[in-house]
Image (tube, rainbow, N blue to C red; front, side):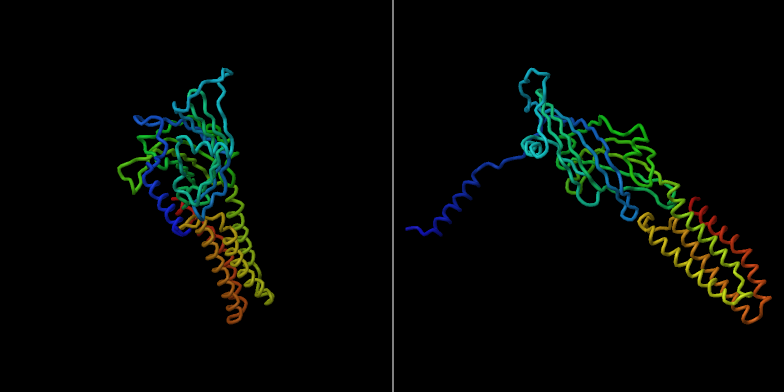
Length: 355
């Protein structure tokens, strides 16, 4: 008499045997094996925000509409305006798994792309309309040497995952917003203004399949940093710090020796304030391996404040060692030279970086 353990082994072996005899189920074939399926593409940008200069990424939310024809899905119309069959949400995702459809991916991004199927419609002639909303964090390109001036190129590459250009071909139909920069500016959030938007099709290669090319949709949005934002976050605070440091040089440590402490202490406070300001603005400043204009302005300010602190110490030392007259003459010279030297350092750094 067979034991329960023996019966379990017998049925398990029978299951593996029958499974090996069953033919392997292939993926769903495209509508036409002789030529690539034409995918009519519509892209509606809904939100672009959180341009991260430190990580080189930005967040985008868009609605992607794809339309293609699969004669195998054709059916007899109802006679009431040829209304399509429509599936929504989870039901659309479930039915989508049973038909052929292009599988896309956002390349060159940080993290994973979240995609939701809004609706799936199939018309009597076999036309399929798929609406998907996706969010992702693609990377941008651009030279940030002149920051807070300059441009960035926000790129979005939507690539076919598994089907090459012999199976799928994209046809760009409509991109919105594309012509009205004000409408695009309503979509783009943050301290950036759109200057140009364009999209086209191309093909990409992969290391694992060097002989095959995969169709790709390339979107490029050129944005420019808001000058007013750079003015009140960088130029205005540094200008106030420069004027304050110059004002401290007018404190006469000869008349009242107690002024020596506020003057030197004030310079130290301004240096620490400048360093703290740069850390506070770290989110808005680019983190790159080369100098930017903002780096030059901040570093130049710190250098000039250090020189002002050193000159204040020299004035105090001259007063102690050689008397009031010598200290006063040196102090007057410092007050005259300091603003001119400060302006020359800032202008030199500005024109060197922009030139």
